[in-house]
Image 1 (cartoon, helix red, strand yellow):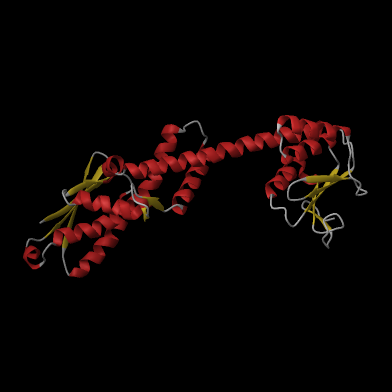
Image 2 (image 1 turned 90 degrees about the vertical axis):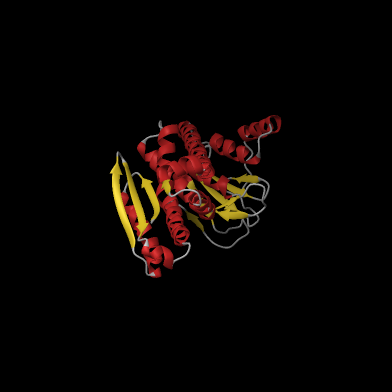
Length: 304
């Protein structure tokens, strides 16, 4: 009695290993499964059959076998074909990225998909795992078919799965482009800093919840004509305080910057931006008179 025929392309060892694990569990039912493999073009076909003597002894044996195999096919789709689909989509739609960028997109996409393992079902307000939905679709297909081609099934029956992969790739590429633009932005700002003549030796930046205050090395408030002009421009052009801080520091171009974050301050992004622009000129204060905390000033690049 023929049970099922599976067709696939690619590395047969990996696919056979996953299928054999499921079949070995099935064989605990004391059954003898015959396996025949043949190659047609670039597709491998594996047929499974059962001696007719077992047909009378075991009711519904064909459907039971299909359930075991469907579980293995679900693993194959997620463990092997997911990565295969990512490679194909990246090469088809985003071929202008170099190999290193493609590898990075691939790894980030896999990480994103594994992190977001659950999907919202259409019209229902709860989530099911990708594997559960894939398994359900495979079982529905095998209810009416004794042969399944894995490539064909993924391409034509798992549209939700392909859409999910494409969405994850798009999200990853969007993040990559934003990161690339950010790095270019930082390089431009670093260039402006490099060509500026330092107007002051040291700037203390006190970061509070909603503003930044600049002091000189004597802890005196810095009142610079350039800074005043930037502040006026900020009011006219709807600049935020982060823009004001960066513009002020680039204009002053100090030889050294000490940042004094307050307890209520939680915007670490602006600190990271200033560190990236001024690189080795930055120190973070762990406590002093300006930030009302005890401690010493420690440089992130070199401890002072």
